[in-house]
Image (cartoon, rainbow, N blue to C red; front, side):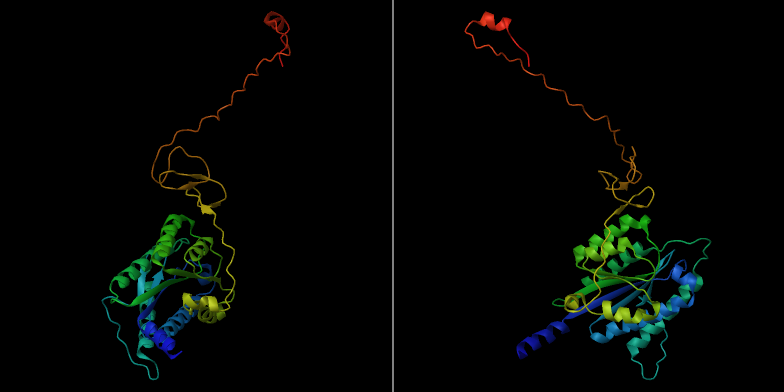
Length: 315
């Protein structure tokens, strides 16, 4: 028993849990346009959740990305600049660093963001691709004999981003190949594309019904590591809608046409693929099957062939 406990402690010391949070800060979100204070409330919950992840184990690592309608930026950690940190009495230095860095960076990004004349969709697929690149870079710098378990948590209140369908699929299958879990916390609407990504990478999808309990939802569902979630009582996974989005109208379809070269999906037949510009032949009419001629048979059993030819009967 003591040997098993010692082995578990040794394994935990040589294992790193990396959490990358992709926070949607697009001002076009309905939840933000409804009340500007909601973004502040979401940010406070994300900071507390990130600090709770760091508090679980000294080897844990955290990264926070801001996703908007025009760019993706790192809120924490900063690669080359250091934030002027003023020590707060009674607060752990690492927690204070996360809080000050995230708030200062996000405030600077929102102040310098271009003004919106019309609602724009968030660049979630690009932000998740940047998160995968960051995880891959850290994976290469891990010391030999040390394992790193990585996962991505997406918090968004945006609508369905069907125009980024191909990029989403590339991100999902790349994460599946690398063993990276993708979790999604939807703050406004149910997103079928992100549901597919959670199902493909064995992640957890949750739609928050009350924003006041966001921190409780994050600590309950997304704080435990994916390796121990099967031992907990978590919300049942939703029914995943695996319909594809057509590339012509950006709508989910049940039956469509697929390009044999780039696998683009269209709801109507097109002689030229708008993605890879491949030219297809027009489908001709269906071939008509020719009817087989019936054989002639004779009911004559006479030995005289002449008599049989005179009394032939066609059936």
